Length: 354
Ligand SMILES: [Zn+2]
Image 1 (cartoon, rainbow, N blue to C red):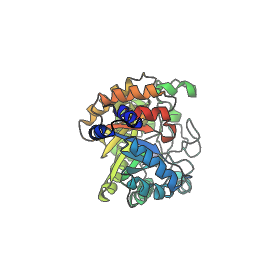
Image 2 (image 1 turned 135 degrees about the horizontal axis):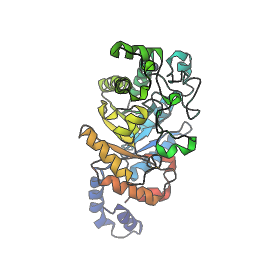
Image 3 (image 1 turned 60 degrees about the vertical axis):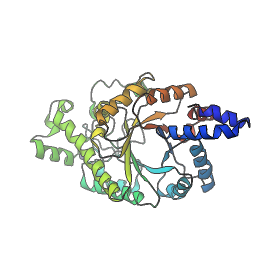
Image 4 (image 1 turned 30 degrees about the vertical axis):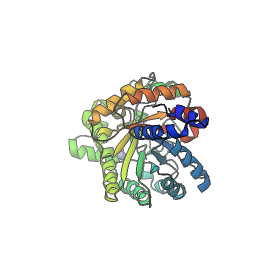
């Protein structure tokens, strides 16, 4: 499958006739390994999108995960259709920094074990403002907003991002950045201890999680929070499926790490496909984590839905991209996704043609 060599041959203007059937067969082959990319941009014109999507199609991309909301999607959807690309709306779910509607409801925000609301005390970074997934009005707000986007004509589906709790444990490669050693769950990063969560849990289990000496050791309390997110995801999935569209999510690298760090029980969600973000440097892992993590996810899913391994392009060389693709291609993953379009250099595009 040396498509690049064929293209080079074509570029030299030789033997165009005999390469044509071979090119066709390569394209067919590459279809079994689908590629996605995250993109967006409020400032992009229809012409910008045309140029971008035409280029992506030529590189063999299958689809785009497009952020920026309805305003951006209105321009991007028809252009994606024109070029035969799948287009899914990239939507932030529980983390809603500066959300005007949510801020009118301070009681919607998640509360830490220390008693701070995520509206006022933002853990780790300024753009962390987490809603509580247990609250009925929050579920309705999130659901309605997503259905509004999902209803857009021509859109193929929606992709949920930040569909989780705040990181109770950061990936190991990020500990030094925040000057933390997170070998246990720290109260200020542990959510949600709002009245609604505590009383719903107590009604079910007979005790308040705050009454425990160490809530981080309580399996039922962990499960309650996995289920809270799962319930919301499955409710959104039902709405999406009723509209004849697809739903996916970008999630932490493996099911075990996702449960432990952000309480994402993603192998139990009603998705159509999933994008585990195997950003190995954040996990302080070597590049072969691309393969190991992908295999763990596939094993947990047991063929239920396709999995696309997501690769973070920042601070990567074209050679690392090539190696990551080689490793993922050795698994049963349906393909890969890249974050994000702006980071896709010319040299990297060359790699994608291989
Ligand atoms: Zn809560």
